[in-house]
Amino acid sequence: MRAALAQDAVAAPTLHDLASAAGVSPRTLQRRFTGILGASPRTVVQRLRLDLARQTLRAGAETSVLDAALRHGFAHPGRFAIAYAEAFGEAPSATLRAGRCVQAVSDDPCTPLVLRPLVPATPADAALARRATDDLAIALGRAHGFALLSSEGRASAQPASVLRLEGRAEADGAVLSFVQPSTGAVLGMVREPFRRRAGVGWAERAVGALRAVLAADRAARARAMPRQRADVDSLVARARPAALSQEPGMVGMALDLLGEALHRQPAHPRALALAAWSLALGANHCFTRDAGGDRERSLAQGARALALMPDDPEVLTLVAGALSLNRRLDEAEVLVARSLALDPCQPEALRRLGFIQNFRGDGHRAAAAFRRALTLYPAGDDGTIAMVGLGIAAFIRGDCAGSARALTRALERQPARAWPHRFLTAAAMHAGAGDEARRSLVALRRSFPDLTVSWCAQSIALHPRAQQLVLEGLARAGLPQ
Image (cartoon, rainbow, N blue to C red):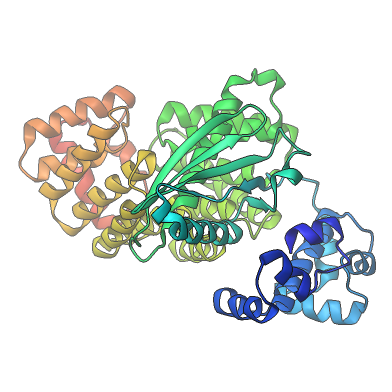
């Protein structure tokens, strides 16, 4: 359907055409559409055409609603307006007006992707490989940020931007690789077991892991590009991992890059959302002397990012993080829920739910959220930050010894992280492990040499009862008042 509409947005594919392309009967195709997508092929075509019309209106690619409707095969403007309002909750004219008012911004367009059928590891795995390919195609079709192309022939028109996803199906899981067709370079590999974990299917987990591979590749290419030659999107890609590291020097570098990006393009929603997160993080973790001013700037930039791109999962999650660090927890939780409804394959959004519960002082619900995130995405930064969240949740529940163990394990995985030592110092001291607490404090002060108890007291995100215990533990370990 997507391929046909891309070739001719007016001439929608017929049921017979679709069934012929799929190699099944029209009745079988209708039954499978209803069973998997909960809608008939005709309804799905209608929704795809509405989505394309919305993109046209938001981009300002047509001067009127009528032109946009006709461009995408809607011959009756009145029926189009009704269907559009039912689908998106606003009139098409409202979308067109908003598109005219907003400066053109980079939407970080979807990654065009060709999915090759998975190769069976043995002849006995042939049926398994076909099912796994179907599962992966469905997950990619639902995920935000990917445009699944129908064939490699179509991909050849854009060799520099189109990627190929290939791999093999084994008895217990799939091994997947992202390949750059023009060079044959493998950008990264993912292995995912077929069993469900924490209620999430293997293909959805694979999409989340593959997205991390792409983000790391974008960041690496952005770092390799001289800064004076980098465009705005490259600056934002370079800033993203630095901001999410939550370390003082890296967050400062991210804010510097984002400042340049916003100077060039003040209405870039992802740059605004990432800057909102970074400013709120700096204010909460004592990276800055002007915590109050940074909180105000964080909220203002987050609100602007949402106004520019209210339906983008990454923007929603980043702004939710900024709001949660400013203790606007109800608003933050609503945004995370919206983000996950749009795209469930987001480790950062899953962890954000856990931190919101930590900030509420509910260590039990926080621990459940972090365990789910750790089960789904155990590797790399995702796994480490989930373990840190688990350690903080244990501290909030009063299990200081368990908190110290979890935080120690997290820091063993990534020793360069500094801010978790704030909790490890306090947890170890309250657990009676004074020597461990003092060693942790030394590590903390290497990154925060001017840190004091009164400075830490400016952090407002954590529940007041837990915050007081942190301050007491730091003071007993020897942090100056």
